[in-house]
Length: 230
Image 1 (tube, rainbow, N blue to C red):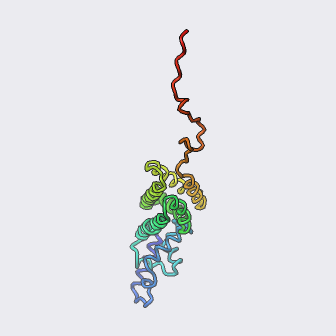
Image 2: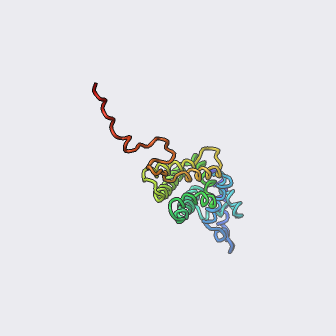
Image 3: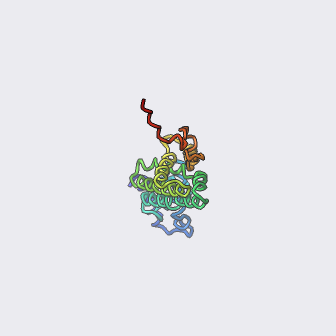
């Protein structure tokens, strides 16, 4: 337990040693409020913002009130990760999947992700994952969840199953980006990648559009006559 948690626990024990008023911290805050505050802190400050003292300031309650609802900071972390994957991420994917066919899903997904603030949250989660193995496992599961949804949308758009899996990985990499890539740049990468994933067009001769190879007529495919003997 770190110094911050010891201080908060001491404050909590002091509070419990006295009669709590009718509007006690237990009654004025809920576990969901602490989780929502942690999500906001992740977006605004990164994983360092998920501290009991910082969150209590956001909620305008004492640090000790945290322990009415959570055993420790790790307990809060686990509930934040569950809310992120089950409610925020899966909820966004389900909303996109209800947009219609596969192409509609892919075109609306970046907008839905942005409206829910998920790119910034994703970046904060990855930073946190570099310091916490539990978070790293949750991020890996979230990546797999996104790939499954995107691959399903691609198949609905007419992409062959194996190619859909490969392309879903590419879109996932575009969304995740590299260190220093901003959330808006990630969304542009996803939109650009998704826009170019239509089925290849074919010409009347059955050759993919843009293919400069000459087509052959039935006559040109006939074997050449052997040279005449002298």
